[in-house]
Amino acid sequence: MANQEEREVKIVDFEELLTFIERRLATAGMRVGRDEIITILQAEEAFLMEKGLIEVLSE
Image (cartoon, rainbow, N blue to C red; front, side):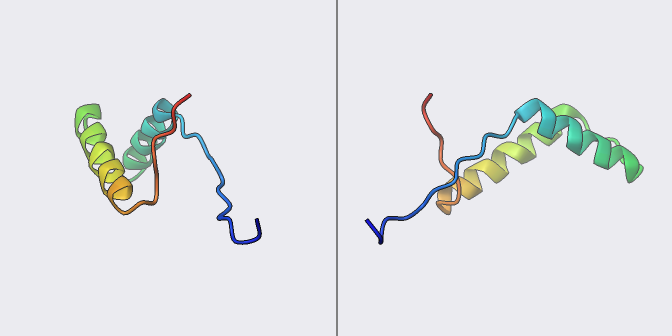
């Protein structure tokens, strides 16, 4: 099917993402708690899901 949309699936490790954000904030001289970072990430995830940019895949 030439018109079928191609999808690329990428899995993001949540702990790796969280650690990366903590390091970036520390480099910028900021300290933000994990709970606050998690809340922001959950809001971002909900926004991207609402826009159809990401979706939850079952294993």
